[in-house]
Length: 471
Image 1: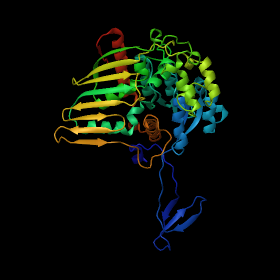
Image 2 (image 1 turned 90 degrees about the vertical axis):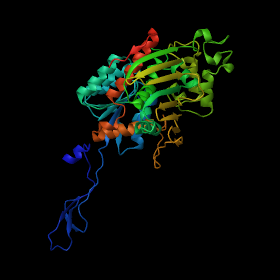
Image 3 (image 1 turned 180 degrees about the vertical axis):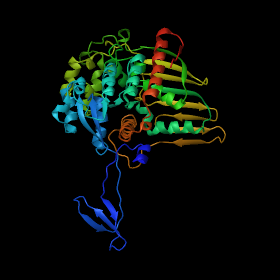
Image 4 (image 1 turned 60 degrees about the vertical axis):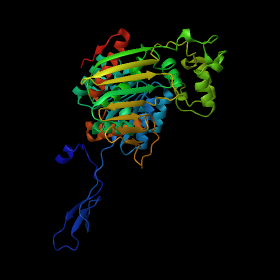
């Protein structure tokens, strides 16, 4: 048992029976103590199979992200089980409760109600609105739950530090959902850089094209449109990318500068004759950001997943989507919303060895979140587009290409973020089951570090100054 503990195994399940050696003159060399307690002669020696303990999960937030993470328990029931859910939407919490056969006593309307009962799960998945992360993460950590926390960790540097302190003082694991670290593509980029084939890394250029209708959906009409209600767009959307760059560079960032603007989605840019809502707008047909095109035309074609499932409380249909566009926030003119977050922003970073990175985030692209990266080293260059990696060696003058994929026997409906959702859950569950924090690539310290870069970059944008990153 001591050797098992040293190798990160917290507990095991024995799936065979005990066998004892017989005296030398016995007809068969072994006996087994069967499950019913009787002793039987047998020819084979003692054997057993070890399996990690199945962990239990409380799901806080049953919206788009929370339901995706809960799906892992459906696909891997031998590894984890959802045992509770909390969500203010009756429809969404009922979907999770039904899928996982939850007892009514562990189905909560408000997440704080789950804190009123003794701890009943190994881990909690927190997929709440950004500004609620601080309020949920700390009490659940103090109650002994391991925490999987949707990004961003929190909306202020002070709150991020408080969460890190809470998980460390409570002795629980924390993984933040920086899913980009967990994809096969990203792991291969990291492997190439760390192998030294590129030499010393001098510069990284990284682009995040959010996608034209994605930005209109999430950051103009949606939950992340207004900084006071959620957070600024560099944190809400691009903390993924700043974290990814820091992980790939593997050096501390010491200085940042940033520029950005809300360039397009303003009342001043509204087309002449634009109405308050898209369904009764005279110029809707000529507007690429029309809510009718993004939602109603989409559900008419039979598509009922993201983004249309975000705007209604039940399974999307032409009828309920039409009503949502007539009455709800997603039917508003994209130029007449209460949005104030940047639709384009650049961040320049300098690292401790004077290497640099330039990052660009832009709303106006055909592709949705298909990142483009160039990494320049002293011995080679890497170019990647989220799918294919091309490495050019300065010495051999040869190029090598990679197209990382999941294992051949891999099968999952969790395809989001290029399978990053699946592999994040896989590693978090394994970390909790085996008490193996090394499985978590986005833990408290590394996440805090990359978040601090984001906060300083945004302050630089607001002040038009170069900022030092204070650890």
